[in-house]
Length: 74
Image (cartoon, rainbow, N blue to C red; front, side, top):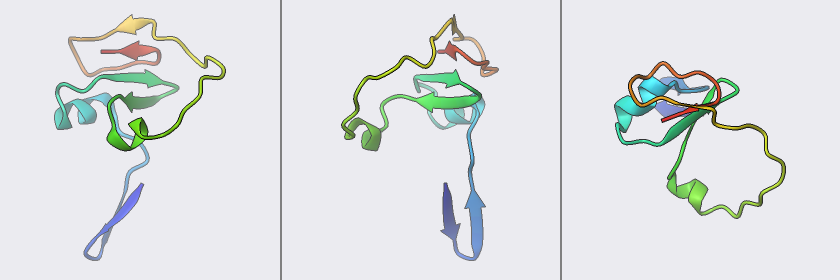
């Protein structure tokens, strides 16, 4: 994602668990293949999605800290 703020360009390729939880301490997140995913995002909820092939499984729950690993959720 890129956006312009005056003459400064900011680019965000990905965000880690600590950053997401700092912005929204109640966020429901999980990590898959090194990427943090967050639930309850309005524009995503408006999409028509279909279930196809399972690509992964949440195997660990992490409520205590922001050091997330793959297949981990809070």
